[in-house]
Image 1 (cartoon, rainbow, N blue to C red):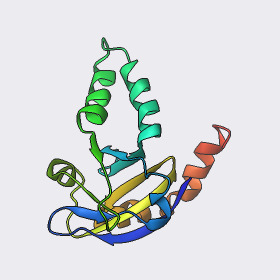
Image 2 (image 1 turned 30 degrees about the vertical axis):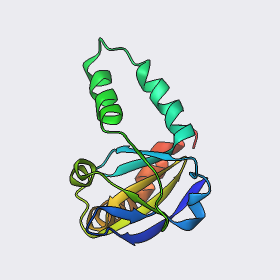
Image 3 (image 1 turned 60 degrees about the vertical axis):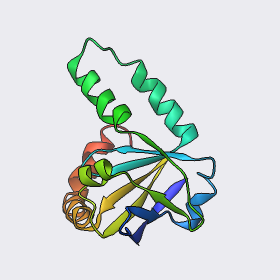
Image 4 (image 1 turned 60 degrees about the horizontal axis):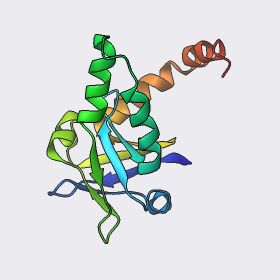
Length: 143
């Protein structure tokens, strides 16, 4: 399970360290792809296979299903760790997420999200201000 919020720097080659406590969970490799809210999603390969299979079963006759599958699948890239526990984020994904120098890696149970620090702080501030409304809406869903 991935939980927590971690600050890391991107180097000039687009590499970012994954927190050491998560490396064992994703030692078999991982997949990084475009996420939602202008962040990147990083899945262990096993979790990614489940997501990819679900995406492949979306109806191609529906434009929103096609668009979401394209966003997730066409943007995906296999990543491996170097000797220092870093992954290399391709330029097109760094550009998508507006990643510059400082990144936040957030654990969200079955995936990690990689955010530009400025974007993360804006999102987090907004979510914190709306936390009561969010909780009430989720309460209606049984959460």
